Image (cartoon, rainbow over all chains, first blue to last red; front, side, top):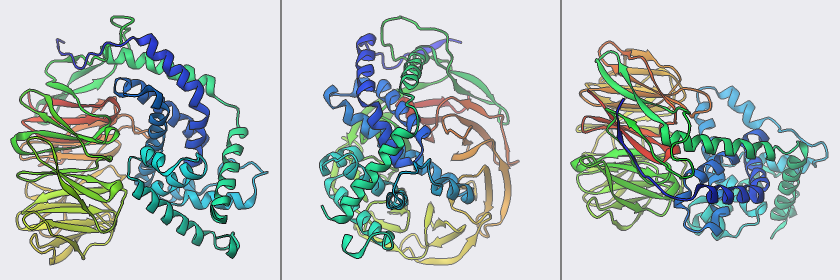
Length: 184
Length: 373
């Protein structure tokens, strides 16, 4: 079969790129896996997501303008992939509501030492709409500033503020029985 | 930081740390696997192909992507090259992670690139990207009026308008009263842009730029427009029939089976409907909503492309969502051609210029395939 097209030939040094990706992997893998895990509640899936994010980084290497910000690019990729995964699960859930409910609500592999309040809180966070969930986790686990959250989620700072505010309000209501009145 | 925030921080950190210590790290294995995939992706991109396959019913023939692992060409160089066997027409590199596609004036094909916050305009005459426009947030759907191009920004709860020639963003974003949403579908028809979010339907008058909320449907999922009627499907399987000028109901809703949300299209004198997450495609009577025909695909249907000459259905070939199947639909007999395997997830598809255009998000490309030989 005759070859008739060649598209987007890019000349970069593969070994140098691979070396940089290896360094990024060593530096950021654990943190990114933790981030994906706490969004998704599934360790295996979190590892898959992070590998996929690195693979996307590899395929889009030519588009990374600032290598020093590659960690931000990776974080954005992980969050976006988590969101896609959750959206896909929601779509699939419409054809299989029982499975979805079981998958989404099942307790992950709990460490028995985790306090009951932490479990309740995480379950409440995981019940939030996916973007609000991501905002809460990036803010309180990753300690990101609003601008960095906006960068990670590809939205404005105003949107981050409103999403955080809505999420906190929902959590306050959802955790009414868990948190004491003065704690909210 | 108030008490709730302190507890959030403490509890979520505790959960994260527990997750970290509960299982041995697979980091080394994951790294090996990543580099193996990178090598394969490199090999794939240098030798991968889109091969010819038969499209049974119409006698048309199509191409499918089947990436093979035949060893590297030009070892030591990063040749991100896609080699295509004839008669594939083109692979067009657009922005990062293209998903939704749309066709507009002069048959320009537009792709919404989620990963680069941009939309690209492809000229079908040359198969080249003429312009890539930064829209500032991940674009959802694209819909094209006679002039302007409308791009949904679900995460911003807004729609931006782009000039079709120069690709400049025109004016301020049109903000949707419901704010940010997970999904936002756009459809232009009969002097208005119809915007469907998770919860509401809006009608933007293209002359006055007035935005009105359409009251009738609850939990809408898709809209299909004909000159005299707008049909909106809701999540209970009801198709509302609305006046294109006012958005008011002009007839009783049609009830479709199964009672689920999905996608609807009006074409060839029928309503075409597929429920989300299912593998059934229904052809429905335009007046009554009664089922005229039904077919089953392999995998979950993700898209239907239909025009007066051809119809194609895309489905996901496996649970991971990474592979797709493409099959031609014989609209009269409601049968499918043998499915064609595509190695990647297909983001979206459109028919234009006697070609099928498919977005492949993982490869940052739009592929143009021969609709007929």
